[in-house]
Length: 240
Image (cartoon, rainbow, N blue to C red; front, side, top):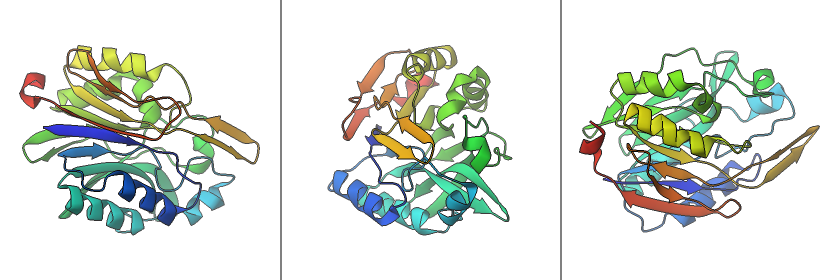
């Protein structure tokens, strides 16, 4: 099974430009599973909730249309983060998409720092999606710091944990070795790079996207400050 990540440097608020950049990065690529970062189309650092709302969409919006397009072009199942709107609430979410459409969504449960000013905490249970015979769990960025997240996904039968992220702390990559080893799962952490200075906020993202094996071996590490795409072949049976 060929799996990988796309480490990006999105331009805040410019969805179409960010879509185009990703499309260039994966042209002529064929894979089984691709993970994109958290909020890959919008950027992360909102000035207000109103601004976040203005970039929100439902699971049939432009982001899902784009993900479905690249799923068709690559043959892959795609997972990526977006600002999800439902009623008068917005969520920091990720969707899992195939060329047939949206398979499902996950809403981030553990909100980090000022995210609590913009988003409602996830109100859906953790879930594992069975796609093409593979069990895929999803967690988003700061969810990693709570061991129960990965443990719950493993108990639900996950073979792989897809982990869209916008990491600013230096600890996650080492922790994912433990998460995979203790739960016997693969994990794909898709981080971003760059810096966003907006309003009173200044976030510098740490890159170093990572694919970690069920036995704690790091199979791929991205650079800390460059856009990067990488894929590896894994044997999913070893995580069962």
